[in-house]
Length: 117
Image: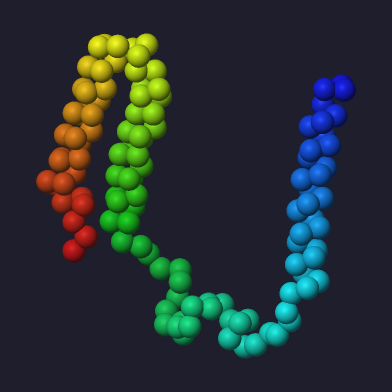
């Protein structure tokens, strides 16, 4: 159990730093409540409609395409790190992977998934 003592001590110190910093901030902050500051939105624009409305499906399509093509980066980093171990086989494998992603990108482009208007 003595091996867990430094971990427990670190957790206690981290919790104390968080509690102390929030407490000090609460004590020294300026208190000038105004109607504008207490309103729901502080962006300077008045509300013009209900915030709970349907979004266009294109937001989700763009998000899904971003996630799909972002996975490429997740697979490229370990491949680049172990490139000397993988050799020519790893290079050919990654070229095929990138070609498949490029075909997917062009397919989405031709289908109009990237068009906003």
